[in-house]
Image 1 (tube, one colour):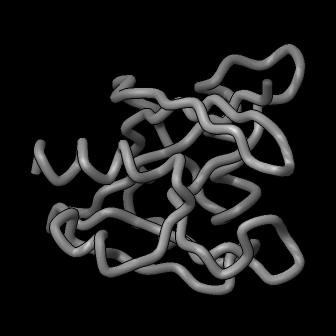
Image 2 (cartoon, rainbow, N blue to C red):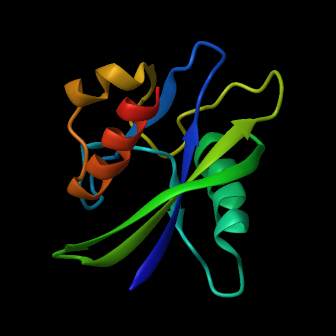
Length: 129
């Protein structure tokens, strides 16, 4: 099973950052929360910091653990670990990996198509915010 560190990044307006998965990858075109697979020897928190730098070209601080979910896809079994994360002051994320990035109000997340594993965190965010 692959562990995926996933960042729930919000702005000052309470909007959440999402990215559209690139063409040529599994689940292409679907929206997701930034993050990626944990590498050997790193904690989930270190994974999130590394992935945010690689995907968005920004530095982040990982905060509290929110929830987790496990999902089996044709391309493997994944355990998604969702953490709150904050971007360093004044940094703007860039879409280095995603087709595009959007800041979305939690109540509007249902308007975007996400992989099934993300539906639990969307429900969580909509209840909490």
